[in-house]
Length: 72
Image (tube, rainbow, N blue to C red):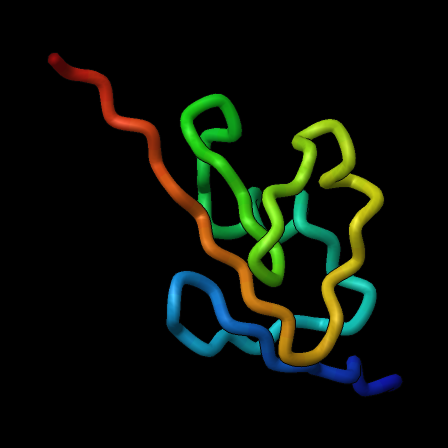
């Protein structure tokens, strides 16, 4: 059985262990984040939601997920 290599990233300030070749879309699905209601920042740059299936996370990446809250 092949062991899956894990890397560590930081998500909203918390360290998370993920498999190698893990995409931003995998992360959002696994933590159950509705894409329509968030902005995603990778290493202090906002990323285009159309590209989340193509962006592979790397060791020590920092992800910030900001929720939009309606109100007045």
